[in-house]
Amino acid sequence: MLWRILKSIIILPGNAAGVVPGLLLWLTHETAFGFKAATYDQPQFWIASAFAAGGLTLMFRTIRLFADKGSGTLAPWNPTRKLVVEGPYRYVRNPMISGVLFVLTAEALFMQSWPVAAWLALFFVLNNLYFSLSEEKGLEARFGDDYRLYKQNVPRWIPRTQPWDLP
Image (cartoon, rainbow, N blue to C red; front, side):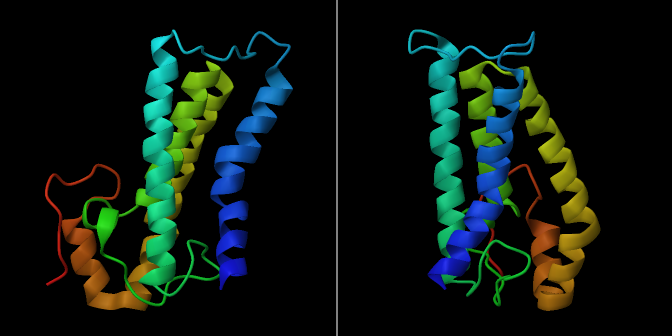
């Protein structure tokens, strides 16, 4: 199970938050879109640090919940066998993607990179399409009325102010 979890981390958030931003920075480093890393005396350094801490916390918390409570991984080829509605999933339906978005925001701010910011926006749009057109239909097929009730009560992206519990 550990290898399946690690493989899903490397392939999915590892590429989205590591490989793609790294390639963008490398490809644009000597262009008008190049980056200049923020320093600790700039506010974006500290804002980026807060986004990174929050994003990484969300990512690792959701990965652990998928393994411990859902008996699966974040990968569509090895999905959870149980509906996970604990921890951050009580507030928002996609805390893993929210975590990746936070990390990408941190990278764009820290590196002061418009290409990374553009990737952040594109990543959000692509995931919004994927979730609405594909993943949610699969979750409804796997978990039925429990997922439909969850979907009605927990927003996709903007967290609830109060936690929700599956009755």
